[in-house]
Image (cartoon, rainbow over all chains, first blue to last red; front, side, top):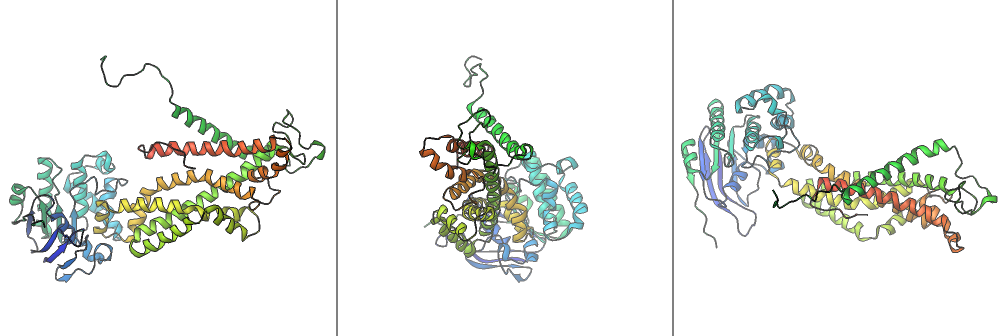
Length: 219
Length: 288
């Protein structure tokens, strides 16, 4: 289970954007989180990925409470959750060719020997051909870069996947392709998914259940 | 179309910027060639004293004239430029490496480390750096290394600030989140993702610092605190020319002065062009 327990988080302690929100994902379950811009769903996604320290509340990953945030979180907990962000352009180190972009988590966790096999396999899965893998982020399109970012999120075989508006910048066919990749991965590994977005038609078709988030009253 | 918004004037005139860059490049190349080639080729002793030829004005035999003990000023200027350039380069390199490491560490660790380190930087920066430099050289016997240490240890502060702010702005990008989520340690994040993106800026800061370091070397030598007085450095040359200037002999001051000003402006000009390349929004002003 991935449990978010009465999370309060934001960027100003006096006016948090997320107030006492709880959400639970079962293994293999796909949950869609819908809400308008600025309601705090991306912040909640970052909290769930242990990338943002909440003011209150706790995150429990597979029965184990998160013991830290960002670098202070144990590596095993951090890498149990794969994350795909909204803007591929911003979430890729501009100096790394796509091949290294995908391989980076393997190298960072000291699993260099798996790099050639795993990168080749994932590049096939997300539909990146050999020549594209040698290009750097500014030489590929948003859709191609997002494919690489999805491959990077899957490379460590996370038990949980968080897609924060993964398809917001993409066209319909790329969206369909990426959703298919995620679904294939979930079917194979039994991973749970938290898909954040504002496209209710997409999320309602994609996910087992969706949560609609109303804008909190501003005071 | 006759009415396009951007019309060519029809002339192919090179911009002042291109002229400035080529002038700087030629000057820097000439300086480097001169200081590398002249000393081994000339086989002359720049310390050779000839009192029968003291204070001769510029002539064909001595293009820059001679000083008050009859030494050839052209040769001494080249040797002086050589030592000043060496001090400038090494000091700028050391200062940049120290500044980059301190700035990157402060930004990467954040929190209290950042606060303490940057307050320390502020404290050092609040003392005029010539004063601090004098304090450092005064602790040692005159020589090249104390001067390099003095210039380097007073000039890493601005680089540390530049690198820190650059790393801080990079650190808030989602690709850092992605790296953390992928299991990257703090060290790996800094070494693989943050520092390489900062290196062009740091390299630019290093080049911009070379002229500044040369000026500092000259200032220290001029004050009699830098290199040993017999060594032909540009600061020493200007310093020893002071007495003859009062007697109306202009060449011992003018030529070393030009040898200091022209190469440093040329290096600064090249650095300015480089900065426009990596950051076109900030048009060049000479940062000396």
